Image 1 (cartoon, rainbow, N blue to C red):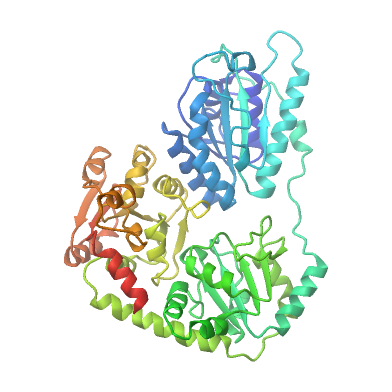
Image 2: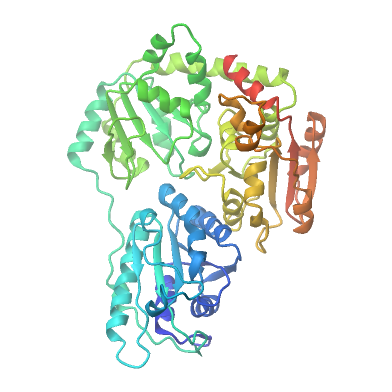
Length: 568
């Protein structure tokens, strides 16, 4: 082969295994102990490599690529504490079903726990949040290496099997002894173990469970389908239309559900929150309470719908997911181990539409609440709420939208987004860390322009994400700067006390202008609705460099406006 690679068998085995199993993107954080891997990965003709110094950023950047490709993406780091910086991204991948491959270079076993620098106990260090930990062995330099080689190949095969079958993160720990920089132009290992590995398992629906589901569906006059985080364009049109045309079916979706139909309820909190304020709340909730609940997709954002379904549980709950079925609503669901599209497409001919007032009753309430929301937006002062409404009015169709957590995703769930538009957010652990890095990673895969919306704390917390040579020129970021964690102001507490502002709200006076200048981003700002409207009219126009629009909103007013919305 006409390339320079590491001559170390372990490095060759890992790299060739990645190439064989379709790992086309590898994110590398610079270091010395991972030099054999860096050398081989960066010179492989079928693998694109990215160099990102900050391992936490690198982990989320890789996660963003895997989020969009739905294929394994590897992150490679040196020994020591570098591995631990991947952990937030690993946890997110674990709960979001994203195939992230963590490959950590390690010191050989005789150097562990003797006081050497950059040595920690790396084997199984992140085991609780991966589906396999492959603890590889160092090569035998002067002797028979065949047993070590066979062991390593089997361990790698097991790791890839879990990663691909379960769409989950795995950890590969690879010890390398010095010297680390030997080179060769020839691959000296074969892939026979990998060729024998079975990866694809057909999606089989248990016949008895399917029959039970059909029976429950055909006799339930109040069926609620609730969709969590879900990849776009994976539900067949005839399935969507079937749900929409059944008067006994109500579909609750969220911003990240990526399902488009005018009959579906997109602002769940807009239905549930007003009921909480009613004198006859118990009676109203009982009218909304489903006989049959069907859920699929990832985790649910809305705390209100979770509280409702925990207190007013359905008679039966089916959850459709190839791997997992959480008891989100405090009752163990019946687990259908397949995809929603596969399940409904197969059973559609057996499902009947029942006469019911369930959809019509709640659809009228949903339409009324949407009108009230629009009227409310028209009368409120400049605030987080009005800014989100204005932003979503301006976002073009076919934009790729990434959202940060906390207030950003929650405000988005109260709004109507333009269709068709794809929306993503890290809802596995729902942390604020890594949102910007994920969005940038996703944007390098996307063919369409990407807009990322974030709050100020999320932005500053992940500001190293801008230390990145791969940001596309059509990447756009909107930072809602309310001078702290404004979302905490809607919670009970003495908001005027210094301890509250310091330890909960974490007030600050920072702005993003200096970071934008340092990384050569176009920077604009807005502090009132007139300025915002003016900036948004040009914000989505074609560009030659990344853009950052910072919107400054009133810290002490935002929570009052949001709480008043639910009262209204």
